[in-house]
Length: 139
Image 1 (cartoon, rainbow, N blue to C red):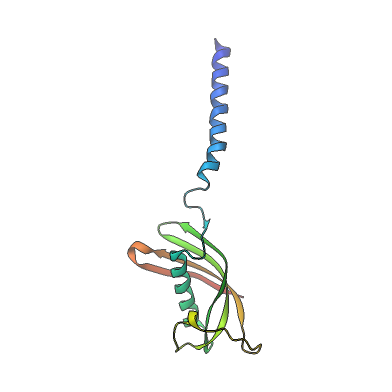
Image 2 (image 1 turned 90 degrees about the horizontal axis):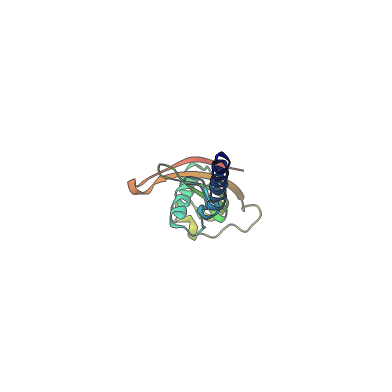
């Protein structure tokens, strides 16, 4: 009788272990863990637009910069949404006083062209219309 109980307990433990291993593949990720986000994601685009506006405002450059390409983008569900974004930016032909830099051409002459890789962390609470730039670093 004691041997049968031990066997049932062992089988139950094996079944729980198998369920934990196989079930983790179905879930895919942990709640709140950073996940890749598509470049065309609306929330990412808003976060990136905000980060670039802050970057251009703080820059001493006469010309605005804009995103050339998104290298990587992750989103994390916290008490809002945290976007961690790595982008390549370039100097445009538009001065800061002109229109939206996204519609401006990039400088193509070597002495004016300037490309930089930047990392931004943007925290947003969409349902409260709040957004903050937590980190901005460029190389």
